[in-house]
Length: 353
Image (tube, one colour):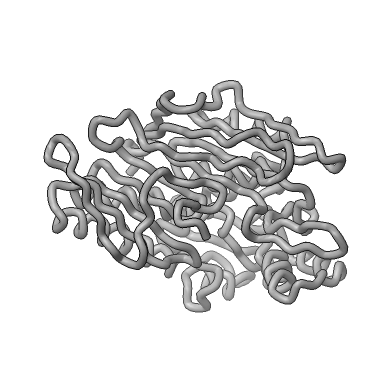
């Protein structure tokens, strides 16, 4: 992987291997420090501006610790995660869950309702079938897909905010929050870094990025949205962000090709089948929890419905680039999609608890 690439989003920042540390003197007594660790199946990167290395290490350490904590809550891969334990109690009545898991499921349910089921975290059985298919490089049995779809939907997931409980109405429902969790983790890691005294920070988990106050003497963090890798695609663009989140969904990394058809890892939760066209969808939003879910849902819904979905979230915008079956490339963006840098997008990530 190119060290400057983070999924379909690349940072104009130096990537650091392992837990290495880099520092560069800046005005105001702050210096730049970059850290990297393998987390949540990807490379977690944290950049902070601090007065010295000790402060930077404390802040980054708090961010990585929060990421590890949330991985134990939200992972679909860990059999001991809180998410998997909840799934094991499907059909058994209300289960009290942590505030983090409740927050993610609550946001997922809201998105499921607004997308009419195009986004649905109760389709874990379907995503596991396609995950295995990509591993074996073979098509899954359509009968298995239909059976997995019949196990339940978001309508079988009930939340009780007053009691902090979750109920999965039907046995066999499996949860997968992979389409929304990394954005939440990135924003929460950023909050932990800020609490440790570093206001000027960035957290990246693959294609999910959350940024706080900008680097010293800069209007924002420069983030490059890479172009769709097909002939005739428009060039990428550079964003300048502060106190915001950005997330990209597409088929640039996870996909399989069978009989000349490219199957994305992005699934339409209504049908149980992946998208089969080249696309990239990038969302800028106040919170990572918003940006991460919106980019997936908008990808599935398509340009018109996707634009309407994102427009329903204040201070959010979307850029969609898609290749039609005839090879033509379409670029669609919100009317308030940020212009290339140095335009600054300001959101209110720091105002959230």
